[in-house]
Image 1: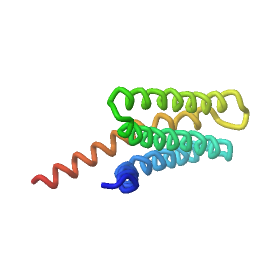
Image 2: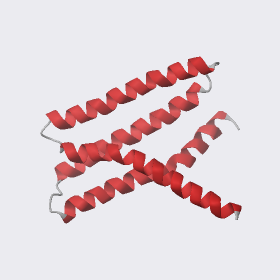
Image 3: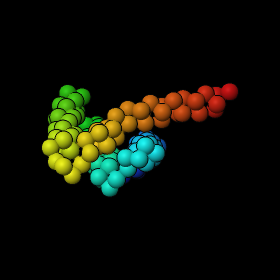
Length: 136
């Protein structure tokens, strides 16, 4: 498989995880609306949190794809660790911005960061269920 095709295929494979993040963020916004706490501040905060998570996830995928090209497992591992540190700094900056600024709601910004592991877990669960159906 050529490199652009591999990258495109990888993103097609993880696209449901990204949709899951957006769906969970949408559910969070619906809950805010149901309890009467929805506002533009909450909407912008959710967009900031979900955007940071999706950017983080995208950079992680690209870093893993680039790590394969580093020539040795040690060089690839070092590259992934460096990008991990940068990605954590980005997420920390987003949270600090939300906490220090009066523009964003800290909880509505932080919750989408918690949704990514849930989206990955759901994706894996559905993938295993689908794989189980195909083997029967």
